[in-house]
Length: 483
Picture 1 (cartoon, one colour):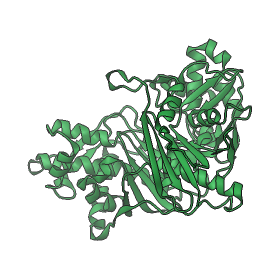
Picture 2 (cartoon, rainbow, N blue to C red):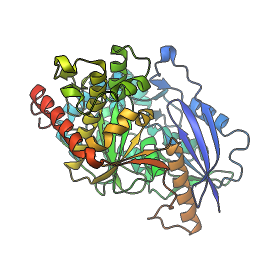
Picture 3 (cartoon, one colour):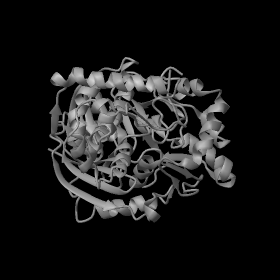
Picture 4 (spheres, rainbow, N blue to C red):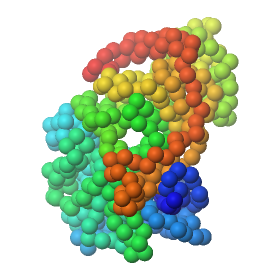
């Protein structure tokens, strides 16, 4: 038996789990918030990455890492850390979905000749959050900083580099690289020309190492694995494989699935990422998920989502003909950036609070089912759907999701899956280094404890609700999925 640690540095905190290498059992845990002020509750777009190290040190305090042989690092995706030739940060890290870069994203699309050129080139169309787009913003708005930028890292790259003592060699993994907008999951290669297109000149990029490779060893002898982004680490921690999809219920929603090959989608709805095992992780995003529920709860004067769920359960599937298209802030799937939501089917008998509550849940889930169908339409097999996020526990979600998704739904117990995935990667790299594990086969840890929900007899009812939703969508936005 060995002991490894998984470190997840999210936008707000650091979580560390210490796990048994053979079973994945969590032995110890640590937590610390990031010392970053968020005025008015709004997360800043620029963050000094030293804050992540301070949080890491606090989370690892009290001897948490005693006996640990290897560490895996998961971190927030899309954070860009520009370094100068001496390895110093040129400016604070640009993190999250940086709305400042929306114009830069459109500029890049035009500069390369359209969405299809990007989709074919790197598997995604530039979005405001991506590092390639942030580079374009940097070149346009901070030209002096852009000129000083000599090295490009993401958050988990930077943390791994720091843990190793800032060696000359800098590394990343396939998962992290695939989200940059200048590395292709299909070819496994960088596109330096896209870095130059965005930044105005070339920059050094980290070496992309394999899923089971070690990035190096610390001066104290701790092995550090390749690291990866939070999405890939969470998928690895959950133990999903071929035939599995993950639907994440945040303010916005995302749908991802394991697939054996990269997908290129000229419409830009699919972002072709790589996972943490050597496979691929196509992702489809919706702008509206839980924000639809929160907006409906506010409209009905309800204090929380639990109350909205309780009210919705007083209605029946189909909400007495009431249909809500949840495109409240525009939408990405389908691509309707300037549209608004639609409430259809208003009749005297449907004008009741419980039917509107039910329509909000069904509309949110139908929007996510549309995203699932984008993947299915490209040959991605979906036999079961993992449902993540606090809203996954709501009875109104669990009552409707299996029949609307047309698949078995798995609701895992809450856990630090990104940190667990990072620990599993560390165990894999440690086993390969010791000759006990195959670099092609990760350690067989026990999957997440979960509640399993079957479509059952409600499947036909759910499909009728989907048809009703689709009819309203096609009437309101004809050809939205074919433009």
